[in-house]
Amino acid sequence: MKRIFDRAGRALLCALLLLALLAPESAPLVREARAVTQDDIDDLQADADQLAQESKQLKSELAKLRSDKTQAINLRLMLDRQIDLTKRKIVNTESRISGYNALLDQTAYELEENRKKEAEQYELFCDRARVMEMQGTPSYWAVLFKATSFSDLLSRLADVQTVIDYDQQVIDELREIRVQIQEKQDEQERLRTETEAAKTELEAQKADLDRQRREADEIYQQIAADEALAKEALDAKNAEAEKIQAEIVRKTEELAAQMGWDATSGGYIWPETKSKRITSPYGPRNTGLKGASTNHKGVDIGGVGYDTKVLAAKAGVVITSTYSNSYGNYVVISHGRGNTTLYAHMSSRSVKEGDTVTQGQVIGVTGNTGISYGAHLHYEITEGGVRVNPLDYLPGYIKAWD
Image (cartoon, rainbow, N blue to C red; front, side, top):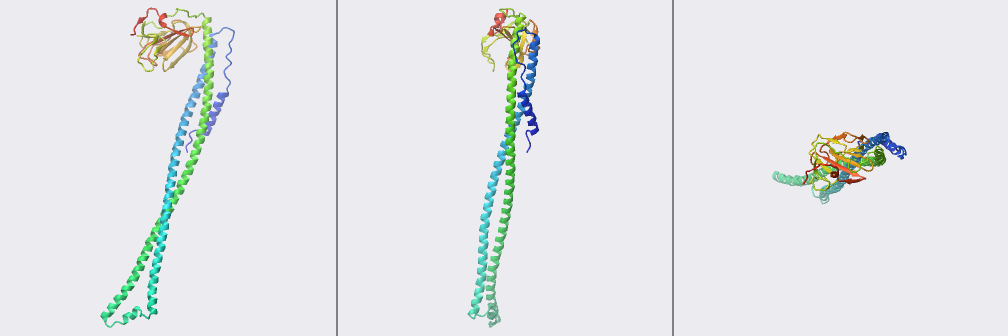
């Protein structure tokens, strides 16, 4: 049986996963009294990047383990079907053997009965001859010699020959039946022998299938254990990454506050310069687009096409630069004290997490990624950790929604 997961490979993986679990976590995230610098954030980001790489490797291993686990499950199901089929074949074969045994018993009985009849017929012939001798009845030759004429001789000869022929015919028929019965018995014995050999072969096949099934169970259990270990290691990495990301956000906000990036009412510029058409406002809405939010958390700026530069509405530090199924390519910039701006559905991003940006700096290009109904820029503002209506900070906007 082909091994899905070789023992050496499993041992190596277990060792790697164990190291991942036992590896010391990043240095404790101690809040320092000294001023935060960009280097501090860069160091944390480097740790986050390393964790992301390790998590990616663990996810790859986990995906392979899950694939191997599926193969092991399918192998067990296939072996179970083969074992069940072989069992049924063995039962059918045993039934055939029982049938042949019954036929052989019947044939042996018929053969014995035929031998008895043959013996009885022969004994009858002998008894007739003995009775004739005891009664003084002339023998066949004496009967013939008493013929008075040639015609009488022929008549007597015919009668004697008839008796002899009848006796011989009966005996010959009985012997022929005995030969036929013996041939039938030999054929049935041959079939029974072949069937018993087939049963032996089937039992050997079942024994081999049972062995493969036990090995498949062992492989499945090992893969399941490796999968659990990989998931535990991945969860540990994710937890550590969350701690580092939280620290990045905290230090970023501290840095923003130190540098005077205080987003009070106002102070924002338009996040692009090509259009001021607002195609979807802030708040409740019904777009008819599958998966789109019915409570719009920002505004959509239309008429921007696929090549308009997206600008940082205010100076700050990038805390998110990634892709999601809903937002597509999006960037979040922290401006300190819980104030952020979000830019979504971009075709591309030109900044990464931890980057310091100035007001008006290009951070990407407009597009139609994620859950979107056409090229536009989705724009959100958060102040003090609470989302606000961006229209209050976008002077001169043009209403372009129904």
